[in-house]
Every structure is written in structure tokens, then in C-alpha cells.
Image (cartoon, rainbow, N blue to C red; front, side, top):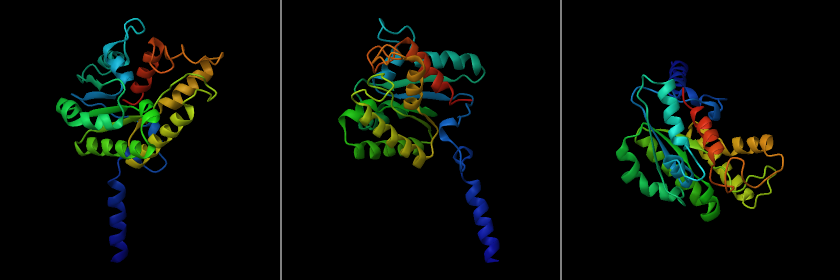
Length: 235
């Protein structure tokens, strides 16, 4: 009888684990299935701010938020997906926590994509970054919101690791990956995607002008590239 009970308990435990969290799964490849009426909100810093306002106007013609909306209007036209954004230049994860109740939850998003990290890596201790990110994900999940986490991108586009802030950026990107794994959320490894893109498209190892206009903020090519990465997480 005890063996039977243990077997039944094992079955229940396995059944309670979401499919995308199965053992051996790569969370960076998992997709979130969109449903009718879904509301996707991109939550972050200046990168998403400019992605939302299609700016700066002399550098960007269309931001990644609009590209995602227009693409989903075509690929999922019967679902009525709405895409929104909440972002402020210079913000860190603790700043996002302060905005959550006032600026994010009232919009009633069903999916929140967190894009953050470059400011954190240069301004706050890694322990505070980790605990704040864990709290942010916990609070979103408690509100029954599907979280998709992004790793940070760049402060300098040299592909050989010689940008001044690369050591810190790599350290904080790895913290994000650890939190992602612990919290069991799909993610976009933007840091990894950016480095791979530079290696393929930056033969002169320039510090900017590839996906960004200043090493950090995305140009038109960067906005399109980020939109492509974001769209990969939806089905």
C-alpha cells in the first residue's frame, strides 16, 4: 500500500510541473502560446522606452514594440493581441518594483516581458540585483501573469569582450540566467544573441554602429533584431 501511495504521489508531482519546465528543457527555446485577448507588456529601461516611442527620431524609424504589434496583427490576427510598454530611462530592477502596482498591474497584462540589466550592472550590488529580480518575478507570477525574462544587452559592441563594462555585464547576465532557471520562466538570451550577431557582422570590431548607435541604445537594425528575438518566444 505504501508503494502504491508513493507511486501516485510521484505521478501527481510530475503532472503538476508545467510542460516548458520539464527536465532537460532549454527555457531559452520555450514558447508562450498566445490566446485570444492576450495583453503583452514590455517592462524595462531606456531601451524599451525608445522601443515604445519609436525613438530617438533621428536614429530610429520604428521601435521594437510597434514591430511586435504589427507582426502579431498579421500572424495572430484573430486573437486581438494588444502590445504595450512601461519603461523609463536609467531604471534598474528596484525601480521596476516601485512601478509595478501603479503602472503595470492596472493595465492587466497577461504576459510581461522584462528587459533590464545594463544600468543595474553599473550601479547596484549584484546581491540586490538578484533579490530584486526574484521579487519582481514572484510578484508578477502571484498576479497570474506569464513572465518572459530577457538578459541584458550591451554597453559597447566589440565582440571580443574588450568593452569596458563587459565583465560586469557578463556577471549580471549570468545572474539573470540563474534566476530564470530557479523561477522556471521562458527567456530571451539577448546578451548571447547580440554577441553572436557582432561576431558575424562586426568584422572591424567596432564599439558601436552595428545594433546600436552609441554602444547601448538600439538603432533601426537593433530594433528589428530585438523584435525578432521577442517574437521567437510566442507561438
